[in-house]
Amino acid sequence: MVTKKAKVDYEYDGNALTLDKSEIGKHEDGWTIYGEVHEDYYEWVNDFVATHPEYGYVFGDFESEVYATTSEAFNDFYKNHKPYAWDYMDI
Image: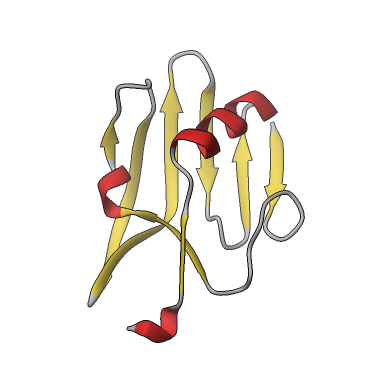
C-alpha cells in the first residue's frame, strides 16, 4: 500500500480538489469508482473508492491523502481520472 499526500505527491493549492460526479460508475479503462456526491449548486465527490481488476484499489480524498495498492495503480488512476481543481468560494 502506498500513500500519496496533497501538496507533496501531487499539486494542490488548498482550494477544492475533487472528482466530478460523472466519474462515479464503471469506466472503459477498467476503473469502477464509488463515492458520495455532494451538492451545493455544484456537484462533486470528495471521498472515493476505486477498484480495477489489474491495479487493485485507489481510495481517499485528494484534498488530504489518497491510498493505492501500488504507485502504478495511483499513476494510472490519476492519469485517467484526474481530480478537478475549483474554489469552494464559488458556491
